[in-house]
Image (cartoon, rainbow, N blue to C red; front, side):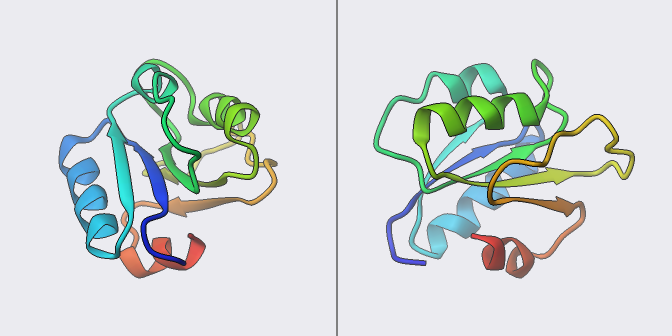
Length: 113
């Protein structure tokens, strides 16, 4: 991945959000970190390269947010993250969407970006 790609991280767990933001920034990315879908929907900056989205956010399902981002940011890569293994309701049929189950290694995430 080229340096300075803009990545959106949407994770309600403060510690995990901080770790993801820090690691991505150390790998040369610009990161917009949000705790919920409402904050993520307010982002209107440069085009996003990718989004790392928790499946179960406090205010909206992650797949609904991903569909919104696809509509507004085109060919954005989507990586869903979750601590749950029962994902029957999740629509991961988005073009380019991937899924990681917590705990996961940063290397696993980086390979998907």
